[in-house]
Image (cartoon, helix red, strand yellow):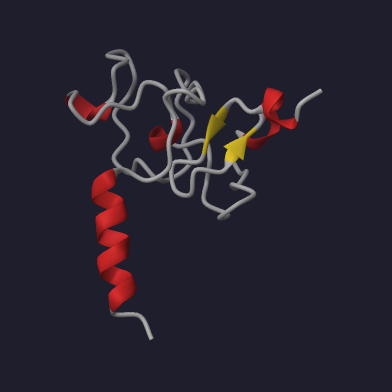
Length: 100
Protein backbone atom coordinates (compact mmCIF):
# COMPACT_ATOMS: atom_id res chain seq x y z
CA UNK A 1 0.00 0.00 0.00
CA UNK A 2 1.27 3.46 -0.90
CA UNK A 3 1.70 5.77 2.14
CA UNK A 4 -0.15 8.56 0.32
CA UNK A 5 -3.29 6.36 0.13
CA UNK A 6 -4.06 7.19 3.78
CA UNK A 7 -3.83 10.96 3.29
CA UNK A 8 -7.22 12.61 3.79
CA UNK A 9 -6.03 16.18 3.58
CA UNK A 10 -3.20 18.61 4.13
CA UNK A 11 -2.30 20.92 6.98
CA UNK A 12 -3.60 24.46 6.57
CA UNK A 13 -0.29 25.85 7.79
CA UNK A 14 2.54 23.73 6.38
CA UNK A 15 0.85 21.49 3.79
CA UNK A 16 1.90 18.21 5.45
CA UNK A 17 -0.26 15.20 4.60
CA UNK A 18 -2.80 14.25 7.27
CA UNK A 19 -4.35 10.84 7.78
CA UNK A 20 -7.59 9.85 9.50
CA UNK A 21 -5.93 9.76 12.94
CA UNK A 22 -4.59 13.35 12.58
CA UNK A 23 -7.95 15.13 12.97
CA UNK A 24 -8.66 14.81 16.69
CA UNK A 25 -9.79 17.80 18.75
CA UNK A 26 -6.43 17.94 20.52
CA UNK A 27 -4.27 16.56 17.72
CA UNK A 28 -1.53 18.61 16.14
CA UNK A 29 -0.01 18.40 12.68
CA UNK A 30 2.95 16.01 12.57
CA UNK A 31 4.82 18.57 10.45
CA UNK A 32 4.35 21.84 12.33
CA UNK A 33 2.37 20.99 15.48
CA UNK A 34 -0.52 23.36 14.69
CA UNK A 35 -4.08 22.19 15.49
CA UNK A 36 -5.68 20.19 12.68
CA UNK A 37 -9.40 20.17 13.55
CA UNK A 38 -9.81 23.83 12.66
CA UNK A 39 -11.92 25.81 10.21
CA UNK A 40 -8.89 26.42 8.00
CA UNK A 41 -8.57 22.64 7.52
CA UNK A 42 -12.25 22.04 6.77
CA UNK A 43 -13.63 21.45 3.31
CA UNK A 44 -16.38 24.01 4.04
CA UNK A 45 -13.92 26.84 4.79
CA UNK A 46 -14.47 29.66 2.29
CA UNK A 47 -13.37 33.23 2.95
CA UNK A 48 -15.83 34.57 0.39
CA UNK A 49 -18.81 33.42 2.50
CA UNK A 50 -20.38 34.77 5.67
CA UNK A 51 -18.50 33.43 8.67
CA UNK A 52 -15.96 32.06 6.13
CA UNK A 53 -18.00 28.87 5.90
CA UNK A 54 -20.05 27.30 3.10
CA UNK A 55 -22.15 25.40 5.65
CA UNK A 56 -24.88 27.89 6.55
CA UNK A 57 -26.07 25.84 9.56
CA UNK A 58 -22.68 25.93 11.30
CA UNK A 59 -22.37 28.08 14.38
CA UNK A 60 -20.00 31.03 13.93
CA UNK A 61 -16.38 30.36 14.89
CA UNK A 62 -14.30 33.48 15.40
CA UNK A 63 -10.84 31.92 15.57
CA UNK A 64 -10.42 29.89 12.37
CA UNK A 65 -6.98 28.55 13.36
CA UNK A 66 -7.96 27.12 16.76
CA UNK A 67 -9.43 23.68 17.40
CA UNK A 68 -13.21 23.61 17.72
CA UNK A 69 -16.17 21.26 18.06
CA UNK A 70 -18.00 22.10 14.82
CA UNK A 71 -20.28 19.20 13.95
CA UNK A 72 -19.92 19.90 10.21
CA UNK A 73 -16.11 19.55 10.13
CA UNK A 74 -14.82 17.51 7.20
CA UNK A 75 -11.14 17.31 6.30
CA UNK A 76 -10.11 19.01 3.11
CA UNK A 77 -9.33 16.64 0.30
CA UNK A 78 -5.76 16.43 -1.05
CA UNK A 79 -6.94 17.92 -4.35
CA UNK A 80 -8.44 21.01 -2.70
CA UNK A 81 -6.09 21.24 0.25
CA UNK A 82 -2.95 23.17 0.05
CA UNK A 83 -0.44 24.80 2.22
CA UNK A 84 -0.48 28.47 2.91
CA UNK A 85 -2.42 30.83 0.65
CA UNK A 86 -0.40 33.08 -1.68
CA UNK A 87 -1.01 35.99 0.70
CA UNK A 88 0.32 33.98 3.64
CA UNK A 89 3.39 32.94 1.66
CA UNK A 90 4.13 36.56 0.78
CA UNK A 91 3.73 37.59 4.43
CA UNK A 92 6.06 34.79 5.56
CA UNK A 93 8.61 35.76 2.94
CA UNK A 94 8.50 39.36 4.13
CA UNK A 95 8.81 38.29 7.77
CA UNK A 96 11.77 36.04 6.97
CA UNK A 97 13.66 39.06 5.64
CA UNK A 98 13.71 40.54 9.13
CA UNK A 99 14.62 37.42 11.12
CA UNK A 100 18.09 37.20 12.53
